[in-house]
Amino acid sequence: MNGLFRKPELHSRIVAWAVSHARAFFFSLGKIYRAPVASIMTIAVLGIALALPSGLYLLLNNIEQATAGWDHGARVSLFLEKDMTEQNQKALADKILLRPEVIKVERISADQALAEFKQHSGFGAALDALDDNPLPPVLVVYPDYEGTGLKAMEVLIDNLGRTRGIEEVVLDMRWLQRLQAIMETTRRTVFVIAGMLALTVILVVGNTIRLDIQNRRQEIEVAKLIGATDAFIRRPFLYGGLWYGLIGSLLGIITVQGALALLQGPVESLAGLYGSEFALLGLNTNEITWVFASGTLLGWLGSWIAVGRHIKDIEPT
Image (tube, rainbow, N blue to C red; front, side, top):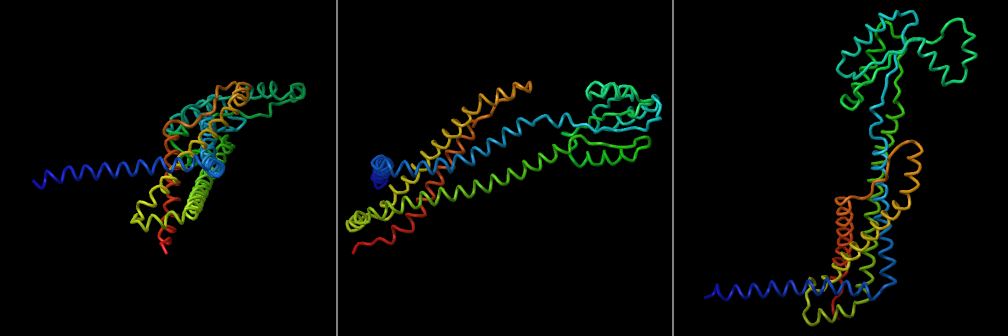
């Protein structure tokens, strides 16, 4: 018999708990609605604070997309001895092609190099006056940069530089390595900025909730006089912080997507001038979910810190 009575009692407690949370949830939203000016200012600050790291993250993603595949064009130019015979040039090219980190070897004779230089330099008449071809034959090596990495590339260049018949080795992608180093530095900088702005969100929400608690001090004292627990009193404040974070996240996402929409047309026009089909990437579903989750969590955390500190200090006199 005791078990039969306990089940309805447990069910009624669960229903009462759910109703209490639902009331606090919508009551906190009503407080935000009833104070539009202060709420809009707080939400605007949160939206900007969440939009900045999201925008920087998207910027990095788009730079990585724009530079994707550039490493496939990495080339190592081998300037050969001028008196090397054509047969020896082909033999050396075949030997280098046997290396596992090499995809392709292209041979450019001295005559071909001179013809290309005449075509692109604009000094054709001056070069015709020369008695001898000043340009050496060249082997252009296309390494598997993506499969081997920077370390293997350095070993390859060192070995080629010590190969007989090769006078000079020129790597054509030092700039790309510098770009990758800059991007890695920028990526860590974004993380630092994101952490600082996350702290900003917590402080802004915490200060907003603190002011709300002070404005309702007398109401809280009366509630404690009639037996309200601290958990019951702090519930709407916690939900208030959650609402601030949620709406601020929505504003941040709208800001980022709006900025991308404004830049999409000019970027596509610029890409078209270079014969590229590049288009800006926006936030995908997972990233939008992360922004919402992060903003909501930060808003709740800011309110939790403020409530935990100030509710206990208010006691009826």
